Length: 464
Ligand SMILES: [Zn+2]
Image (cartoon, rainbow, N blue to C red):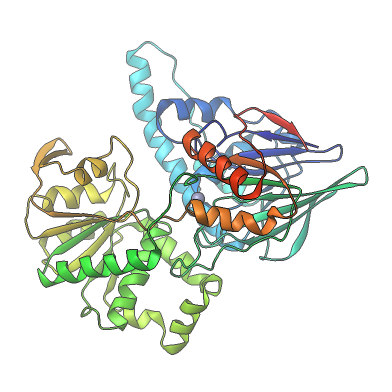
């Protein structure tokens, strides 16, 4: 059997895609989008799959775009098989892929204008909303823990990865010519003790482990410390009657913020104040997650038993239209506005920043990673003036940066998760990390468990 790496392997973290071929069948684990500039765009176009008609099935670990974003390409290339995922992943992937198709159709207009000026031929859209609808019909829901036949000679078991609602690590048991191999795909691995989410499930053994290493060279602050820090920033901002802006991704982080605020209200850490979800996508993601509360951890279930969390969220308002969003300009604090994008590169958060950054009474809380070159990064690095939507804006607001809310396991958390399988001495393949992180993490595995790791490049194939 052969495993080919079609993304997230050359020292990058996007484009996750693993192609497994035996004499009897071929399957793909994840088919994610490359993200970050023109090179990624080219990779999405050129690294499409030649053998899609031969694919028996796709297994999807979770709904983030860098894991599911190229799936609609399969709709056009003759793929007829099922896509296995948890039900929550199917719903969230639908939301994320529809948004992606929309963003690409918009981007393409801009790109083609540029290409026309340069005398280059126009590009076709990567995929459309119709491709997304078509591929969504191929999804088959699987429950955590159940063994499901996915292709001739292959069975899969999805378990909770604790990374995002519905996220999974996948154990694939592959039989070829009487020989059986147990292959574990970590997907993106979450952290133990994350609020709401269950802890990542451990495996007892494996023949091969394909392991992510996003934070393979770093540790995170303990989550309890991060939550306490968040609460204290919110309390201080509320005492100043601040308008609190939280730039956030619509899926995952936005729901975590709502949950933390609800708990603060319940525990009387702060008197309830208006919280605006100013993002149609975050509103829909919140509704999807609300339909899957059974996936959340014991602490969440206990709180929900005591009193429905909806009662703590009576001051939460969904802001659907841009007109309603504009009306938030006129309200005064204390209040929280959750809006995207998470790195302030686009979206409604830009308008709120433009209207409020110059006011000393404003607080901005960054709760996610801010990539180089983004407005978010410029702000956390202490700029005193920024350009927003073509206008110079003075920065008088209080800017708070919180680094501890990562949805990915840190170094020791990755090692702990892998540790439960180490005694079976599996073959270790480290992917989904920048080269420095992969190398450092491979070093840790050698030191701790005496096991060598492979660090494949995109396009590499290994014989298992
Ligand atoms: Zn992810």
